[in-house]
Amino acid sequence: MTSLYTHAGGDEGLHRLEEVFYTKVLADPLLKALFPKARPHHVQNLSWFTAESFGGPDRFTRNLGFEHIINVHRHLRITEAQRQRFVDLYMQAVEESDMPADQAFRQAIREHVEFGSHVAMQNSHAETDADLHPLREVPHWRWDGDEQQEPAP
Image 1 (cartoon, rainbow, N blue to C red):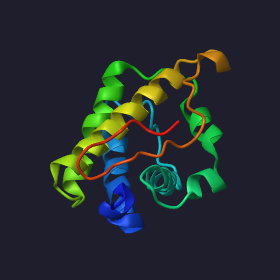
Image 2: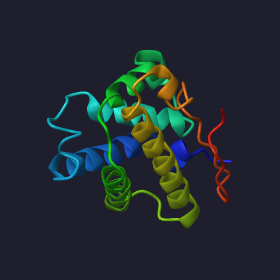
Image 3: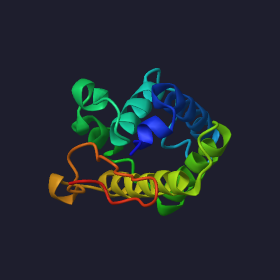
Image 4: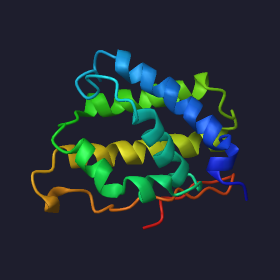
């Protein structure tokens, strides 16, 4: 079965998606506190994370490691409204970046972003390592084209 990575257009498609998304969050009044300024490698890092999670190359793990994403979210104190806005903007970016329109693909992306945003929100409020979400590696989002599954542990 085709991976989400391949179905999304590989590196080119995911980079396009993350560029559209990042532009949206930088301009969003609710999310500005979480993204106070543009960071030169943010789109690349987001693209690497999404690609790896969707079945592509493991560049995020090799170059940054999962601890990086934990540290980025630590102490941000993401609110539920910010988390939901993040998901909404991501799905708008999916629409605007010429991603495949089939329902199963779009649902897999939504579930991936919902899951990830909940992990980020929990980690953003963690006072100790014990408060962090137990996920310690890039989740590998499985998709068979018809139904999605939770990420592999």
